[in-house]
Length: 492
Image (cartoon, rainbow, N blue to C red; front, side, top):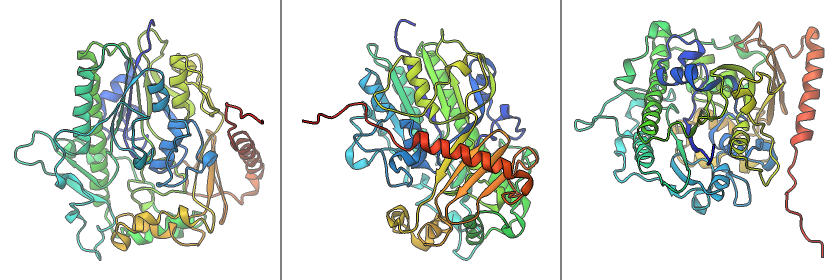
């Protein structure tokens, strides 16, 4: 290629990897993503985030750092001006950076000028009624079993609307307009950070009815007595109060989530069509990935946690279509990858040598089909130490308290019991080991227990496996425990 390619990053929020048709889910309606994986892209079956909630994950995949490197472990500790962010790297390299949608990355009080040329705000703002946090009559009464379910169901368009014009639709239409008028003298980086399928679970037609409820795969059941599982899971399960839900009700919630994913797939297709119409599709690298997953009924839970690492939370969609001229073998890759590999791949594609140490590894050899071996293990981390009151996310409690949607989880984060303990996961293709600072560790043999129902941490037959994974975890922390600045200081 004679010039740098355009970069399109589409980043939905809270999309679990298994809700895609090409991953073998018969209920998922994702034709645009499925077609791309067959023809022009690589889709990774084993891609993992480095923290199971929004802000820490985004700080990680935009910097190439694990959350522990600089303490990005909460929703309210974002990237600081002296820290590396890929968007800034691209802007400094001459890209015209357009950012539409969610932040959850940099402090709003610092502004966005260092990171993008445009932080998009639609000329016609969405109706207030499309904000399901504000317009929350769907919750019912506080004593009801829907109050903490996040289940809103079918959303109704306004009479004069062709689409359910919310923040995501506004930003998708803004992205399409940006593609149509992309500057001719600079490569474009378009970062579209969508909110959906983040709950509340609600979606309009035709997406609401797209999912065949009879094809939904079985849920992972809530463990009997929660023996061997992290205490925060049982605590949330009790507080969400959904134990009496029938399978039919769960299927409606899950189908609504699937419909939200189908909606994003449609929006993804619209952006791809806009690239083609603008004549820049072949010159564009497209990345599609989520920041983390969602319980969506597994274990009898909804939403997510900050310090547990079930696959439904940590395994995410990750696809890349390279620009024309860059070798690609379209397929589903079995390689184990981390979201921190995203910035390393962009840098390798553009020939950028980063000015900071990071821990991502370029995926270009995997994309080319040269290998499907990338990492021997992946890592995810979260939680806090006792006494770290600044990590309790009390800001969430101040915006709703016991009536807030997140209260079943947040109340445990704001107590000094073991529930919100610091924890870290190391996962290989077969085993998952979780080191929990203030309570029992976890070990799962994923080959015979893919639902992570039976904690085998005390099984003598797996003692050697535990020892090996602990050693691997020690190597991980020693390798990534700090980053030395590349610019040295003068001593005198």
